[in-house]
Length: 110
Image (cartoon, rainbow, N blue to C red; front, side):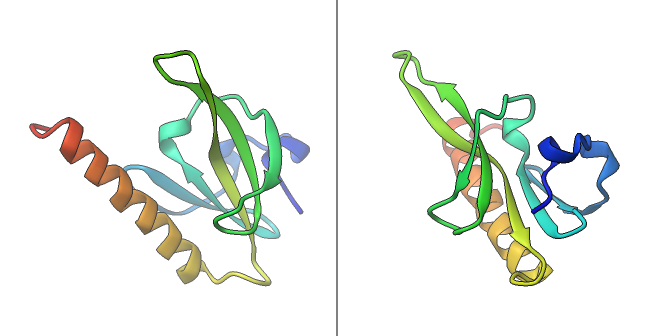
């Protein structure tokens, strides 16, 4: 599996196949990489299998107002031999819609 961390590739070196306000899908050599743009700059603390998508993901830690840490996905690596671009795009659009709803509830004038 190819990851940006292992290969020291920066985000700019991988071509963007599609992007929205809250996501980007990049083209790795063996994986389609879905990135959560709201987590830009968050330090990767672990790589683990994501329970929702059942693929390798990079996770970081965010802290709530009470100082409690929560592990969150930063990017997901969908193997090209198992996932089509269309399927990854569906997941990205679901994430986009979830964030749009949160934005509408918290920032109605946006």
